[in-house]
Image 1 (cartoon, helix red, strand yellow):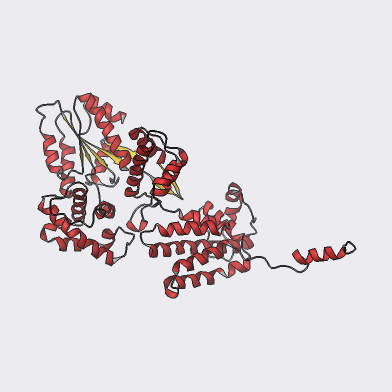
Image 2: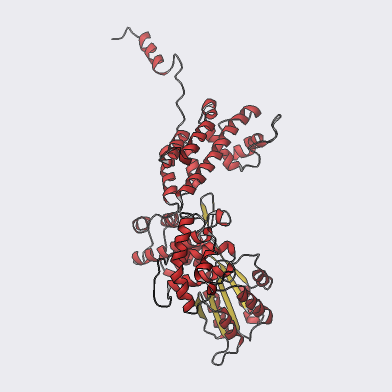
Length: 494
């Protein structure tokens, strides 16, 4: 931010600045930037959320101010940088206002929803003025339903009908979404410039580096990254910055245990089937985290937010880490694995797809266990190494290396951490039990795809059997039998 302020002092600041990142971070940062520049210029910033007419805004900025030394506008979530991959996320907020049957012009949340819907239609080159139902019919089912299914084609058809009155009211009110014309207009504004001390700050949650206008702004040093939450193997990065910003906003801090529980109950990743990057956090769930924090700050009466308050006031709608389920299975903890699986399926938007996706992941885990057992015998690598650093440095290279007579090593390229988890899980099962697992997987797959009336029970049964290895057979002369002989040898006692 300091570089932008230096440019503002020197009169070399670009006429357009982009602040991007999760809205809980980007909007406060954009507001602070505007306030600092406004103080330098003696200008009062103007904040606009979801402006529906960027053309008029840009035209106003091109004219000199008559009553102030300049103009400084912060436009939040215009969506001008969004692309088709972001369409499902844009519609997420619009779906929340349904059913809508208002007879007047949309206002508040309904207006925001209508603007999002209009923008998505423009992204797909669909003109609602030529026919509302025809335009909605041109949107892909996955975009309408949110990408995770939510019922498939039936849900998409229901949503199309639900959007009809909202879209009709939006058109009647003269609303319009942003599109290619606005991108061109902003490009012209960046190229041609604005009068001195006139500036437009765009605050956006969706603005990819590949977008031509973003690239142009980056070359001018006019892009400020606020930060974004992301998840890797269940660990969410960026939370400290989010909680620090919320503490600054509300004046109330949160205990570390409470922060972890709040994140666990609210955050969800974006399904990669929607074209999102792996580990991307759903923007709506980030917004929910911020909203719940503000509620908790109010309820705490100014005291730090404690975990019991989170547990009492925040409904658990978070996403269960799938790797934690596999870790519980590998560690031989069937109860923990089942509880985590139940939470995962219970929070899924499309339980059927989630059930099959988890089974696919679990099947890969089992195949790795089987491969580990065979490669331990083939390579003579050490078994039972619980230390991850030692496993990574000494065992993994042997398991993943070339094996005579094997065209391709099935463990080649696998991350050492994941391999270690499969290695430890395989050690809990006998070679005979591992040899039976392909048949067990096939039986479960058939039950999931129609042979069972209770697919959740089929998946739970598989999890329990994988997490609970069969007991080793009792050998003659051991356990109870051995104790009996010892008592017999000392039979002189009474």
